[in-house]
Length: 176
Image (cartoon, rainbow, N blue to C red; front, side, top):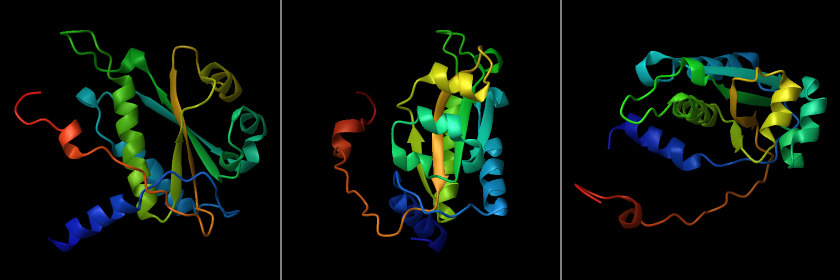
């Protein structure tokens, strides 16, 4: 296997959800690279129906009260990922709006970049979206897709080995 491919696959094998973070700030240049990756992500018809809010620890008193897990409150940065359904591509056949898909692609790519930067992340979806939207001043027509906690993983955290379904249960070739 080519060295670049080996590095890529090794990177993704290291990715995990981190729920406890060191008391250490993310370097501004690292954060800038992550935000650039968010903005470079692919989107249907290049509509880019997204907005992201970067919330640093010092600006999170009210938001921290809305987070169910205390470990997320320690993350130096939380990014709110918002979808703008009014500006997304819509498939004609079934009128499916791709705003959530596009935002999810962007966040997933940023999570991979964060892993490459030595940072840990966790997608936070277990929340009251209306409460968080109110706290962050997100306009009513926007969808809050989720929050992403980002920071340096606390030392000594054990990587959970989660059972994965066998490929034969989830991959079909040719037809279902």
